[in-house]
Length: 308
Image (tube, one colour):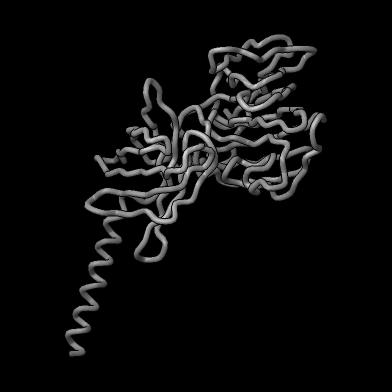
């Protein structure tokens, strides 16, 4: 009887090991492009093991912040998970399923509104750099006179230049540099009115949050956070209606943020794209993009020093 029980136990362990091995191809981080009607948008997925039998993860949609996945199921070669809505008005979950096709993860998602969308994911690059960067000559991205070197992403442009200030007086289009960059140091000054919300996107993919809100907000969603991922070590905000500064260094995935002279994030790795990213092609250069689709915001003195 003991021998039979031992054989059964070993067989069950073998099944679990094989099942665990079957998940290997899914594990890791995925840069996703979702194909919607007439347009594409970016998304991100991380799948990891929790113990020896289960998978969990994190997901970033077209908007909003990183959301936890309590369980990722694998059945008949298909990965499936479901998460509740975040900022959507509907009550139904977001349902996602996918399978491996070669080196890609290909699947569908059913949105809270009931729309079925196709998507494809590719493994996110490590973005590890060898050695310290050598910095080039600084570039003045905003000349204080007009919108030269910038373009908007929406149909209308509410951005204006007044008295050396780049202003978005009301919600409208986001604004993006014509140039693209890889690794860089960025100095940018901003001022927001009470209740405002904006953000500075690094390579067009990673949002450093600007928001006049502290109470009731998650630590990784406050001002100076990398939205949904990295919280600041301390709060250095001066509040609304005052000029403030970010000095941001981005090398590969490692980001350092100095907010009003205080280092609030130091050489921390950004896991993946944040909601609202222009694309999910993390291995490519990208622009600086300023969020203008939420609330009023003002910027000045935008200077970038690229790595050679």
